[in-house]
Image (cartoon, rainbow, N blue to C red; front, side, top):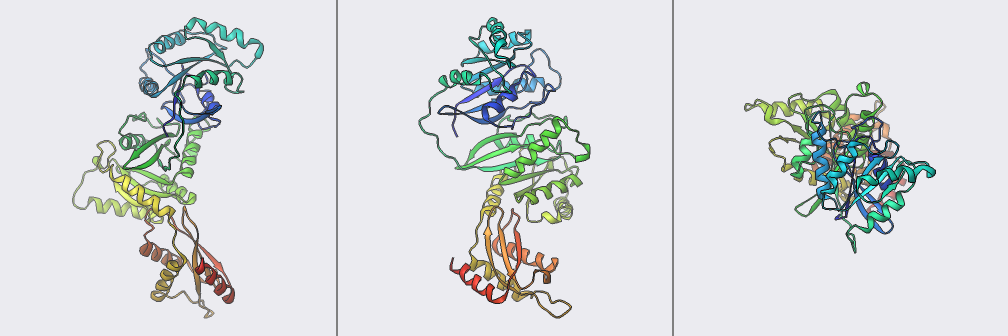
Length: 452
């Protein structure tokens, strides 16, 4: 969606992410007392009066300090300003103007876009004007006293901001395929996002835990729209302390929940770990389509049996995830990255697929013909009367039988396999609901389902 963009900038810990959440009416940006929580630039949609726009959260900007992530945070802020139609400099009203604020103001005066000054932490109406008046010396125009936490003053600020945004007569509705990129820390998720978008969208570093917020990126490719979501690396629960990492992982789990397709990124050097297995389990639990992306393939020494051995190892470790397609890539070099889009499309289509009742029952009859349902020790055989699809995303198929207890796990896996082979559900979980029903009732229901 082509919307005007407003970039939020400022030094660390002045309340930028709190303001972004306030403007977007969400809690998507991580807010924490520790400086430097936000590193990448993150996007959220906001609304004021009759105007939609995008607000970009950026990391705290510190000049003349090249330690840790600060140079990359400055680069991300620069990229945000290059995209923006307006910018808001957030300062701390309680602290008053600082040398860092003055340096930021000089930098912003050189930008060719409207700049607005938001004096945050002005919770007291009696003191807000006094606190804000200190910032006239930054020469950025009128300082707007606000409280990001309570919302005081944000209306006046937004009135001024939207007046400077370009007008949009009509906003098109765009259908997108949501694609979440998940995995353990340092498996190459952010590098993969940058490779898929062709842009330096995420900060990439060998330091584990670089990505903290979930990072959304809209791209269009061959007429199809995608929203790519980079997430924080997910470590084992016992190693995660309450704080920034805890909130990052919660955002990652929410990204899985809102995705159509999840790319489970695995480090080719490390192979499949217990944590990878747990992530695959989480994807199945949420009912998401998925692709196993084996990254860093360029770092593996190969011979004629390497791919076969690796695939066997991964399939053995992720035996319950055998419906997911597997791709061996290198996000660093771009090896096979383009092939991911075809796999994403295929998985998304399978995830949304609806099969007619007639076709489902043809598959069932063929499966029963080759392998009859099991017979209990008492000589009572299981019977499948009919099946019908009751929902999609993921596909759920209800099978009406004489007694669900007569069908063991082995036969249920056989039925699942037959449906996958006959109807090509590659890339998506398929759920079967085994429901008991009497013969006459089942016949009446089957007739109704077939007519529908």
